[in-house]
Length: 83
Length: 83
Image (tube, rainbow over all chains, first blue to last red; front, side, top):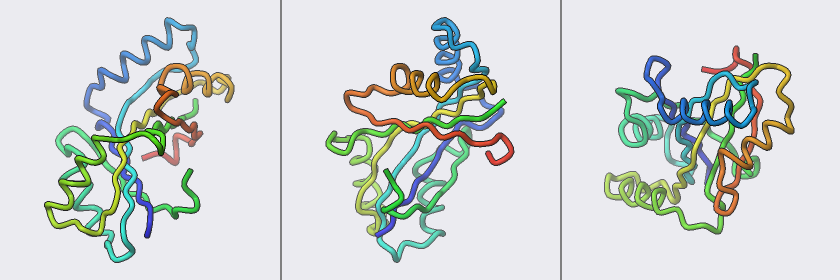
């Protein structure tokens, strides 16, 4: 068993209205040291050891992310290292 | 300038219907090696160097996460190391 994290973020050239709203709210609340916020998604998958990197990349690319507007990254972590 | 990532995930004891829906969809699509999926959020913040860890923890705890149902983690990364 392995734990895999898939990080999905809006592409740099895509507007991120959720992140912009958070950025403005932080400014109003006095956190002026924050100059940009982008919001994405984070998936934690428990996968058996025979799942290949290729299969994980296919899952991320075709199912977890919308690649028109989002970038994704697959990160294998050990279950021990995870929170 | 530093890049800070805030990871927000549903607490272990909280049902995660989005993650469960993805898990079921993966099973239907033949990805049977995936035994669990949990979906959370990932925030990327650009912050000036004078923003303290304490301020970042306050931002995560009070604004980015709903601590009744979510856990959060602040990770400082260098801008260079980021994608």
